[in-house]
Image: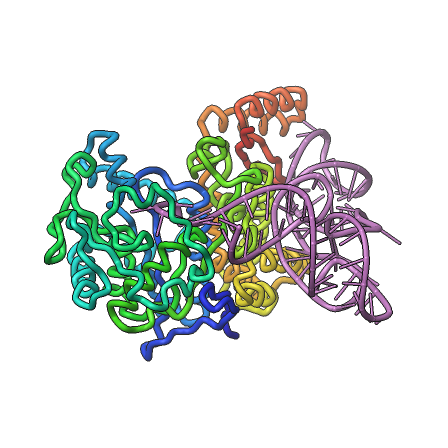
Length: 466
RNA sequence: GGCGCGGUAGCCAAGUGGUAAGGCCGGGGUCUGCAAAACCCCUAUGCGUCGGUUCGAUUCCGACCCGCGCCUCCA
């Protein structure tokens, strides 16, 4: 069954398929700028892209999807951060790249096959800018910067339909530039000693030394790693304009070929009904939430619980709901493992087929989750499940990227004193000294742990922090 | 001002021209020394407001109210 997805350019739901003869689906995702910790809004986009990739791999084969996601490691913000901290740019970006990778692992995001950096592709960017200059699509400004001449690219604005708008030209954008037209954008920014510190490279012929503009990196890296034409390009809704509009102008202006067959944009994550911002105090990082006792898998669930093309309102309450929902899936997995005593060996049954149907229908993740829970409630896993159902369940978990066995382990570092208390209580219970047992339960609660009695043993679970 | 999106139960959130998925919370029950877990049952005559089309609208159309996003470097 085909995977269909909304395309931002044509504004239609269209089938996704590889366009090249090799059958490889080529997807490029705009990645993070590594100057600070990524927040959960960033991760919403990366998680949606991750589920899409998993679905595509299921459809076309695990080796038939090539996923490229860049790291922006040189731009205004990274340079400003390096200057603030009085440290070399590379040191700053290396640190935040490592933090980003750790967060990605915690959220069980599949690593892209290629994760190119802007600073690692200066030559490719300079080359592309040179081609644009040669074709008359760009010009060198008096200060040695290079700008894209929008007027020379007739189809500019097709993605964002900007021709139907009135471009708001503010004083702020006009003052420091040497552009021929206020709408032209920078391909190469001439070096400014007082702002850029040590950051500069030789520029294209005729231009000054400096650094690439923001948009050109994606065009150059996408071309290098995926070719002139790719199958899907995606990012957050804010990137639609100007970033992706400019990428199209650069890539198609340069190569003369269609840049991407499909465009997909994730809507923003809101927190408590408002866009995240430091001033509102509603900006969360992964660390902020795990520090409150939430598991990364619950965060993954919560960030995926809304339709990707609709703004999602994230609250701590909804995260709590996600934690419980993940717990239910977790326990079901445990029950099935217990019943079968081994990982599934059969081919997946169609027990959860509706889940995949929902995902293939414009990546309707919330509908898919609804279908999943309905399917779970419709049968008794202990008596009615088959090995094939188990396989189907595992397949669904894999597509959603819910790595429950890791989720189980994540919080299972149990302090020795807690284990000792639990052992004492278990012994007291065995001899029916319930008074002592209750007192010990209270001590465990005070220590932040919950003791779950079973028939032949017990489990310890950490209590959630407020 | 231009472009676009949304308002569904206490919270989050799907969906349909024919009478409201799912998760959480809440209530009841089975089980349990306690507490959980597990399992079963219940929980929106209602889908921003007002009109219109229709046999019938939450779903289509119009107006209005409210919220949100983009409009040159924020996923």
